[in-house]
Image (cartoon, one colour):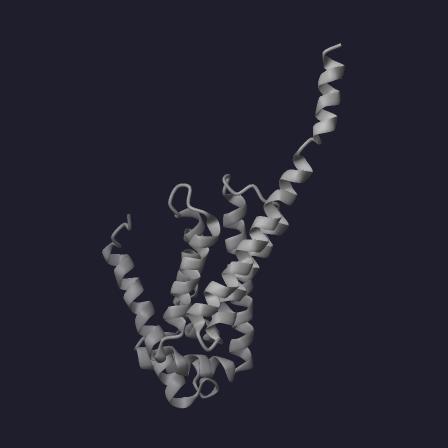
Length: 213
């Protein structure tokens, strides 16, 4: 259950959203490189220090839902229903994120991102961070006995699925296609882990024979 925000938290959230909206409006009107931090602060009617208390950099203004997306990805693991498999839960969340980011209203934003080396670099670092957070959540789940490498690999695959699907002609169909491969990779990793831990039947029989003497 979501806990309602207090008055102070609501005010902070409103200020943050006002700054992000002002930044995006200016970036789309004038071009990302033509707008400075002071321009954004003036448009949002806040001090520059207030802006930096909400956003660490100019690039972060474009990706203002960064933290929310990261939390949604980890909650897909930690908040999934009891006995629900990991991969379907991840596919559902990635599908929702893809729908959000391929809406018609998002197209100008992605054109701006694609045209800016600084924004592309920021997006890449953001995706790597999301993948590490997701891998940590998967590795911490006692119902998912996988190696660290397997957890990081599947997390990277899931994050890359989002990027690849966003660029596809049919994003939702692309998510389904990619996750068929991700699920196959996950299943392949499971027996390899168990096989390393299992004792061969012949050796087990020999051990019982020795201890029975």
